[in-house]
Length: 154
Length: 75
Image 1 (cartoon, rainbow over the protein chains, first blue to last red):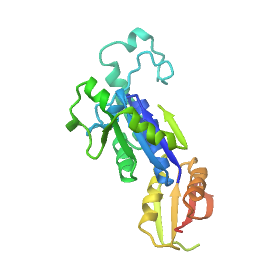
Image 2 (cartoon, chains in turn green, blue; image 1 turned 90 degrees about the vertical axis):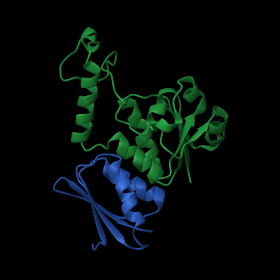
Image 3 (tube, each protein chain N blue to C red; image 1 turned 90 degrees about the horizontal axis):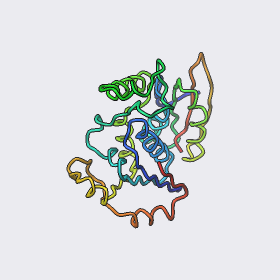
Image 4 (cartoon, rainbow over the protein chains, first blue to last red; image 1 turned 135 degrees about the vertical axis):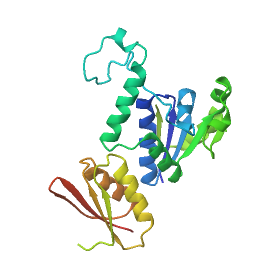
């Protein structure tokens, strides 16, 4: 049985998808998967994932319906609009929501681990995260990563 | 080909067809056939990879009017 380690460090809507899609797919194929969430990757572990957003600002790769100069991207409300538009697009194309993907990960026994150091750093409350996750340090993850066939940094 | 269960994944995109297939197979007995219908072009290669990795044979893979039909046997 293959093993995959994923280090999830980003917390925006566009960056939340790769770790969850890869983890759920590998788990569906029977792999042993561990996702180590650190820094903004901790957002993936929140009970409620609705707060995850994406910003158009300084995101030149983001497809836009109309060309948008940077100073317009910085205006109040643009982030909320970009997030809403992306979520709508995701839904209309039949792509799973973050909640659905994460539920499938949990169901497929993907192990989510949280970086204790970052939790302390940002003074997050453990109650804000889903149940059943371990709070570990880098050394613990190294143990799994050392035996993994695939290890990804996202 | 006869099948024991049908899974409709029309409109679902990667990785949902595979995830739903895994779930559907879990409730089936060894030897039973699952028919999966998908509209995701990527699912053609995915279902083959799923069959290779999990050992559940893909009995057939075909396309009909823009839809992809797969027959997978539970190992």
